[in-house]
Length: 114
Ligand code: HEC
Image (cartoon, rainbow, N blue to C red):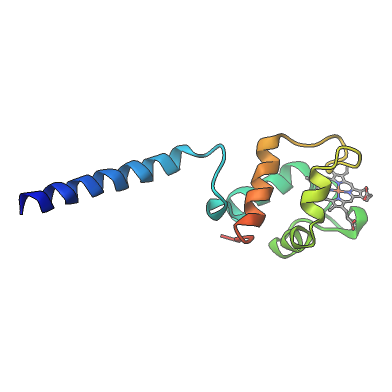
C-alpha cells in the first residue's frame, strides 16, 4: 500500500517536472507546439506583410491568412525561400536560425492553426 503511494507521488513529480520543462522550451518549441496563431502569424507580420499584403502583394502572394501561408509551406516554397542565401525572403536577408527553425517545426508538426 505504502509503495503505491510513493509510486503515485513519484509519477506526479515526474509529470510536474515534464510540464515545467515544456514551458521553459520557448526557444525551440517541439513541432506539436508550434502553431500558426501562436508563432507563425507574428513572424509573417514582422517580416513579410510589408510586401506580401494589401491590394497588390508582391508575387501576387498575400501571406496574411493561415490558408495562404500553409499552402506555400506545403508547396515547399516558404521554407526554401526563407533559407535561400541567394534569393532570401525577406529580400533584406535571412532571418535568425531560431525563427527559421520555427517554420521547420511548424511544417514537421503538420501545420497546426491553433
Ligand atoms: C521587401 C519586400 C518583400 C518582403 C519583406 C518579403 N518578400 Fe517575398 N517576395 C517579394 C518579391 C518582390 C517577390 C517576387 C520575386 C522573387 O521571387 O524573388 C517575392 C517572392 C516570394 C516568394 C515566391 C513566390 C512564388 O510564387 O514563387 C515567397 C514564397 C515569398 N516571397 C515569401 C516571403 C516570406 C515568407 C517573407 C517573410 C519572411 C517575404 N516573402 C518577405 C518581396 C518581399
